[in-house]
Length: 325
View 1 (cartoon, rainbow, N blue to C red):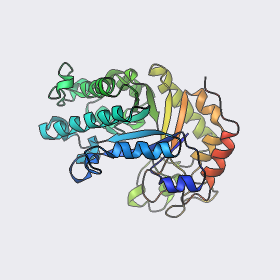
View 2 (cartoon, rainbow, N blue to C red):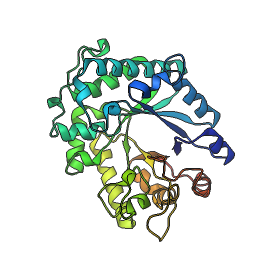
View 3 (cartoon, rainbow, N blue to C red):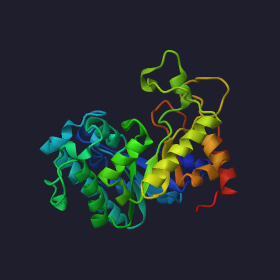
View 4 (tube, helix red, strand yellow):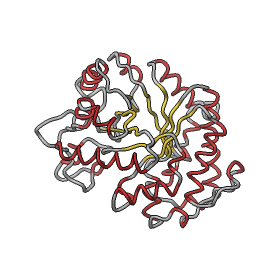
């Protein structure tokens, strides 16, 4: 059980004991994560230090493919972009090797969904600059090669790191189609898979009219028991279809349940955190290993605005945790 993108001061002040502490590593240009600290890539060590301070394992969400914009895959065939991309991946893994302890890496959320859509479910048809990376000269110049290279470099440079591919259920027409695509890229060669509910509190999508940061179709946003049952059934299909790899739910919203739709910034309603931590055996039955709770956008509920919900639920859960298979 973990949290993401939360200041250590808040975690410590609430007396929390997360198992995982997650932080993003983003793209190129001024947002290049390798430039956030000196020397290059030292941010990895800073996050690892924060995680150790609260007794957690560090988790890094690698989000470099979105540097040109969400869903813009033009960089795949751009030598400059991909040279920087592979260089940064190597820095990440080398920094994890220097850390020398277990860490988790979430490999490129959303990218695989966009790749599935834009390749018409055929990852070998979407070309990419892979062999310009000397570490992956024997792999194919396509999306399969990208996935393979991310795994190969992890094993070569950061053997204590555990890596996982996130699922984008919107990338295909159904669960089976997404499973087939993820099998094709080689997701089963990783250590775990990542599942998602929504990256926003349900109440944010319920506003009328929808605001720009929560503009999407897909209601009902606020699930009832049937909605959760369907979600866990889908996740179990991903789990069984991808080599029975353990599942980590990532960026699970932190809103507080309410009978009133909507809400206000920092206080939109949601019931995922409440339901997950009150029904943990449903997660383990679907292949679950862990859950990371965090806000996917700056106006969503956080530890600082949830009125102590995570503090109370996590304390209650830890008094009687669900046994893993």
